Image 1 (cartoon, rainbow, N blue to C red):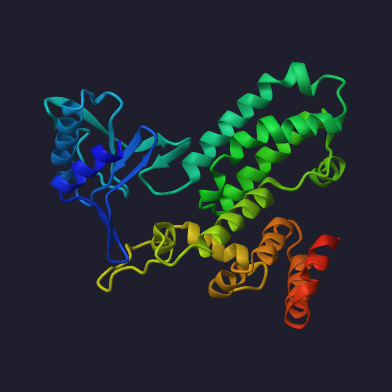
Image 2: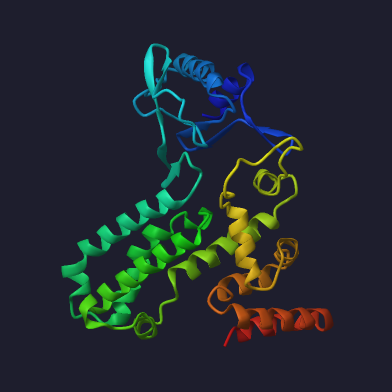
Length: 317
């Protein structure tokens, strides 16, 4: 597949530009995404890709091939012609388990994940949640089998406040079903949370998001992921009218703001892997306590570098 993509890229001028570098394709196993800045460039690219694949005895499945334009454009046609085949132009497409929408937002993906999670909970209602299993065992099953449905790839979502409320509402609904509490029993959400000792789902997502941010910040400066994340827009770029879109980086800024950090300070702190792991793991649940521990840890690191291991063994309160 890599050889086939290299042949296609060499013969066609494609790609999107980030930080003065062109990125032409994304591929994972047999899932391939070809990138282009103009829709008109995709037809010769797909034709070249199909011709190169035919020379190896492969055939492109045009029914599964989709074209997606990121950014709302109402003047686009519904299909394009490639080698006499109709290729659909879609608003949303599932790629590697995530729903990619043309609006470049995560709301549709979150709604899709919520629906799948609710269906999985309801399918186990009679067998598991209404059974006589201990709550601790139900929580283990919930964290292992149900929660992972929503968490898969959720660390890449740009979550707004409205999305966060929906996520926590889903989490509360699942916990109510797990412990067998009905809506008409008027049990407070805090009491359910105290009974299960389960952190908020948004806090878990925030912890995973900060973890992957730390991985990216520790990468080499020439790594593609780091260059794309920190790339600055061109000098002649102008934002469209209206409210700015919520991006993943702006979500990270809100996360580190809870720890009284700016984005550059967070990038520097991420170089210290043990300290960043402690903040991302425990800080999402106890931001103020984690901030105090981070300050103490920094002072200990400056005075007694060899004592840092003892501090992390103690852990949070």
